[in-house]
Every structure is written in structure tokens, then in C-alpha cells.
Image 1 (cartoon, rainbow, N blue to C red):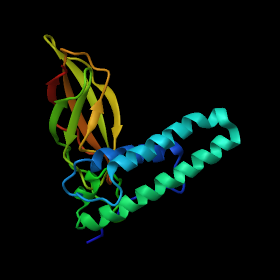
Image 2: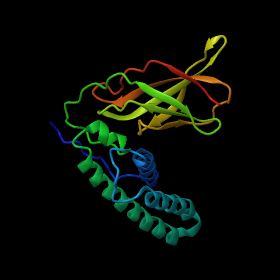
Image 3: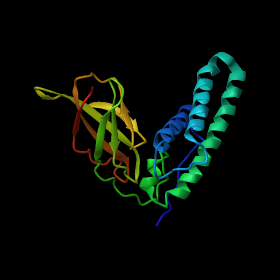
Image 4: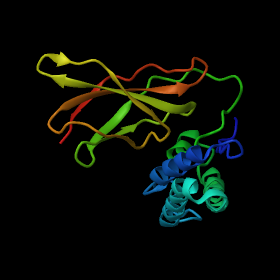
Length: 208
């Protein structure tokens, strides 16, 4: 059985990709019972992530000094993420689904990949106004998840709209929704030998 390993890919990653990994880990690790005592607490990771995002935004105005500062914070953030990644690999007990729940992407277990199974939406909850939050069953060989939504009205369901791709199955935030409107959602896994899994059964929820 192949070991469950984190796929970081920092060497060729853009600043935005590293920031996205950090955001996914912050969401996946916060309150995750599988990882109760990470070597870097999530408040510290949040602080470094904020510093990095600020440094990215300020780089254009500060020239070479701004770039040097941004690179310094980038290295700091990557060190923190590597610490957490090693911890996740040790604590996941070689369970790929548990590893993915941390928000980290996982390495492919083998070259002979299998198709991703049909996705399952476990729950939909209201976030802040105009936001719904989905929890999807983790799929071990998924690289990420593609989400689509459609408004549900008295005349039935409208056309499906792309909601983007997400790496964290435990929390998919959909923003810009209309309070009082019911939305249907479908999700599918991206990855595996067929590139995409089947769309999940639609699940509906009203935005409050």
C-alpha cells in the first residue's frame, strides 16, 4: 500500500499558489480532531499568512526592497507549512482521506490511477449573509473539487453556474448569493484516471 504523503510543490509555485495552500491548510486544520496538536498553532499560521499577503500587495510600490521582504516572508511561511505537513503525515496514520482533511494536497499514490468515485455533499450551512458553506465527502485521489450551483424557484431550477474549484472538501465557501433564494449544488472530483468523477446528486439550501 502506498504511503499517504503531502504534495507541497513549493519550488515552482507562484506566490498566489502558496497563499492558497496556506489558506486551505488554515481552514482544514482549524478544529480538525484528527490533528489536535500541530507544531505550528493556527493563529501563528494566520499571522504569517497575513504578513505574506500584505507583502505581496506592497511589493509593486516598494520595488526591490518590497520583493526582498516578500521573499523573506514567503520563506517563513513555507517553513511553517513544511512543519505542519510533516506533522500531518505522521498523524494521518497513512489514511489519505484524513490527510486531505488537513487542507494539504496529497501526492498521487501510484502511477496506475483509478477513477474518482461519485462525489457526495454531506452538508450545507449558512455562513455570513450572501454565503453558503458546503462540506463534501473527501475523495482520496481527487486533486480538487469542482462546484456548480443553480437557483431554485417556483418554475423549477435555473441553469447551472460554475462556482470554481476547491482543494478543501471540509469547507467550500460560496459567496455573492441572494438572501431568501434557494440554491441547488452539485460537486465532482477533479483527478483520477478519467480526469473527472461523476457529479454528485444535487442538494438544495436557502441562503439566509
